[in-house]
Image 1 (cartoon, rainbow, N blue to C red):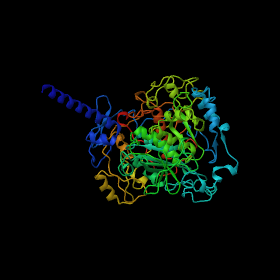
Image 2: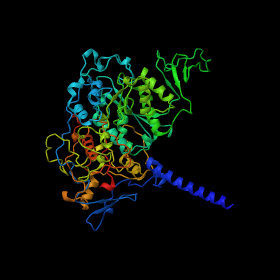
Image 3: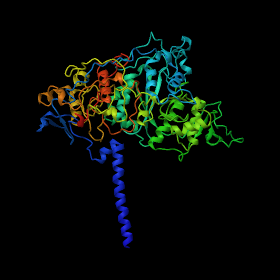
Length: 634
């Protein structure tokens, strides 16, 4: 029996270790679950997430410790160098570095872009020369941008024949798009009207919003022609059936984007892995295998099996059918599958393209982090069927090799890695030609802000000397949002919630319960606090004034700053909205003066109407809360 008790003890010990490891992994993956595991209380009191200057404690080094109400975390602040008095830059940034936005009907020659950055199809001579590709993208617009003849322009087409829904903003019911002279501008409550088709952008996310979601959405708002764009965020609702409700009613980070949901910029949709996918008519949807010579008998719904895995309904519509055993619910696999399925159903006409997987030169080495497919086309249905045929494996390289073997890879344009992930060749040490500007050799570099943290980052810079000066602290300080300015909006650390047209007394009562009003159009929607770790904060102008009065914030002293301002500007970062992959840096926070901090400051200035975007445009939408600050980097 001794061996039995020994075995039982070992199994129990293994179970405890496994449970602990699983708990840690889940805590890292899901902040909401982490909050429960770490026993962070659901309600942290009436001062949720606020700095309390009355608990400022000076320490021997001349610095101060600030206590957060309702949380164990403290922030150590050097009065002479901190996030409240640090200049945003040591140089004067040129925010409108892209110049005026091209005409809404401007088209890009994708094949020319591919050939310039790839070389020949068989040789792929230029794929690893990222510097030259980026220079062509920045300086060659005169070659790859064209404005078609008026009759061929997208804005002159009939919306009723558009390849996707809502191209005219009215369910494709109009016979023409709005004339540019009649287009209405955007406002805080309206997107305005688009003098052409509205282009959808589809993304997938699982779990609560994080800083990564925030910086993506703000990059979209910062760069896109919003009247002619729509952002669709598909939330994994197989793992969490209430994902959309949670995001709109319980997510303190996403709450800052609720006014954009109200205005129509952002559409939240539940993603459920479909049990059937429609196939285009007048196509051989069997990949050459052929249909049954003798179709089966119709079922109770009148549907008939016409080929392996394909049924046809009473309207003649064919469907690709998936069984529960075929479906996958692993996040990465679902993400891969979702891109193909959504694009096959909802994407735009004749915009098929993907990107290369790193610097691999095989014609089937695709990556689908950024992709576009023609909806309901022969190619899109082929790829969806292929993923099912491959055991529901929609990994881009699996799909790419399949397309190459079947001789269909040339239908699927492959943009080079330089367009979407320019440092990959540097990271893999197979770059040819010069390094990029900035020269970053690992994916954590963009988070680093200390002097000398990135070696030789300007080694390939050929531009003019940047004008010194920058932004003066105290004159153009970080944007602050307070009650008076937003007519009822109360800034706090994490929770920006909705409570509109309420009396001041009601608002104060809500605050005592840990529920905070948020600027928006709803009247009776209240967002409760999520149970997640309190790991970042923001402050109002009044609180910053209290910190100054308490001596916590003094005049800035450059030599005492761990993260002094530098010459980094967004103009010299990788251009475009989608040109940097976070690449599994899930737990890193951007240090002050880092490249990501430069991006954050540009966003904050834009949404506070102090700065313009790369096209010289000013923000005309609803108030958008600035980025939070991280206690360890104050």
